[in-house]
Image (cartoon, rainbow, N blue to C red; front, side, top):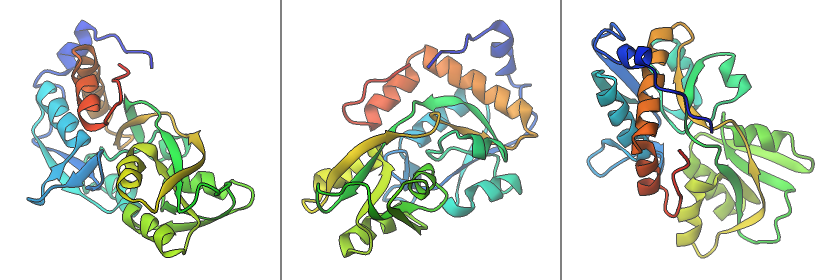
Length: 240
């Protein structure tokens, strides 16, 4: 992905006058490791917690973390319950009609099918989390019937119980699950969906978007983004 150039103007934008708001509320799901999850202390953790904290520090923003169920995460951003979505959300044209996105802080990640047999051929009942790019993709597949669930854990349970023949999700999410569960395996071909993962903001929050973009650029250029990707995604080389 082509880097943005951090200009003097962009650096100035990250100063204390960049965004006139006391606290920026960072909205996440807290249920999609390694992107985001709740640790044993009930606190938001994961790749996006580390990255979000680094963005806030770089941009000199005071930030607090808020969790919200995935199926209402965009409506609650628009209604003002928090100021950003940093929750493994892929940039898509459909979402971009409702909210705005920063530049991507994570490249397009392969989506993969996990099933109880490697004989799965892309047909049958396929589970996905509601409101995801994977759910939209399944709906467009010939011979596949989509069944949606509110949480990613429920999609895995549906395969294990036989309610679904397979689940389609980000491969980074499925990798540790498949590795630890002898009954699950990857099947069929991976698919590339979306335009990478970015921070969602309200379309009216142009100053905040510019501030976050400048911070992401700085963290790409100093190697922080790559370091965090390599920390949280086993075996992945940072692409920036």
